Length: 216
Ligand code: SIN
Ligand code: FE2
Image 1 (tube, rainbow, N blue to C red):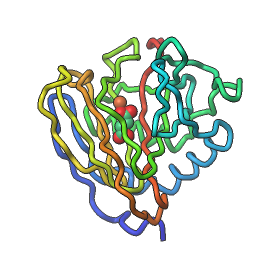
Image 2 (image 1 turned 180 degrees about the horizontal axis):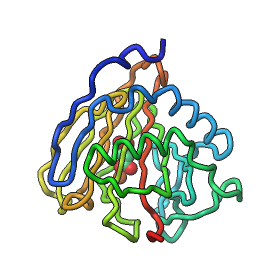
Image 3 (image 1 turned 30 degrees about the horizontal axis):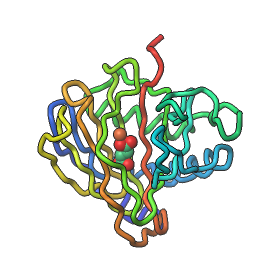
């Protein structure tokens, strides 16, 4: 039932230098990914983080892996312990690691070994303003970003905040990989349109894999 479109052949769309969209690439993995999300969320619940500026984010977040992205009054940081549970972040589910490896190979980053996976949940109206992923010390590692559930408009710009934006719809099973020349390109998610998806219900999930520590 859940794998209604699992036999659709994936395809690739170049996005920018070093960046590619792997359309429907995650579809065969969806059930395992959803089980992984449930497992992680059971240990480290989704929460609305508060930015250093005092703004409560509309996207609900949690993490798995050795390091997790979080906020405190001073800024953004990667931490080994979930500040809400005072426990290490849950282990990265094997299905996450396996899919990320396949996707990074397909995108031309065979060496990528993520140590952090941020789980984002978007309810209708939730958005992520234009930003750069720049809290990671080793920018040679790419970003691998998996979309599940309701479609969302992804904005992808350039190195400067006011560079022109490409707008593309990310759908269930799509993966965006960016690195190399586009590693620091600005990107964001427009406010999620309400809807219903058979796998995720009334929301969208995004898994963002990163190397957040130094390579050993
Ligand atoms: C992010 O930029 O961290 C997430 C992007 C997305 O939700 O697709
Ligand atoms: Fe990002």
